[in-house]
Image 1: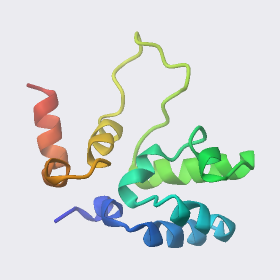
Image 2: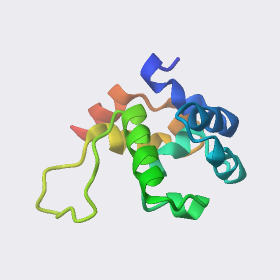
Image 3: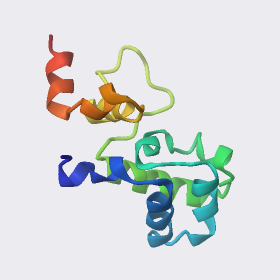
Image 4: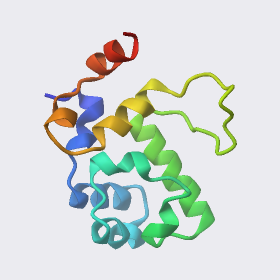
Length: 119
């Protein structure tokens, strides 16, 4: 069972569309359902990806990206990130693994992910 703050990983694309509508963006529901964006795929929803979904209003893109990061509990990774920068946010890395489908991703817990990172 997923912790409450990870419940979005189980969202269907209809759940994601309802969430987008609840944020005040009902005009974008179809952009998410037509592209089958599930809770697991939200990790990829950012200002670079949103135009591919048909969302091109910059202020809306910024707002939606910020809400996604807040939901996922991750910090923003700058596009100009250098390899000399500190390691990326572990929650973001974990969610990238969880965004995949299959038994391995389904069974991966955040604690197991952290344990594997430190081995």
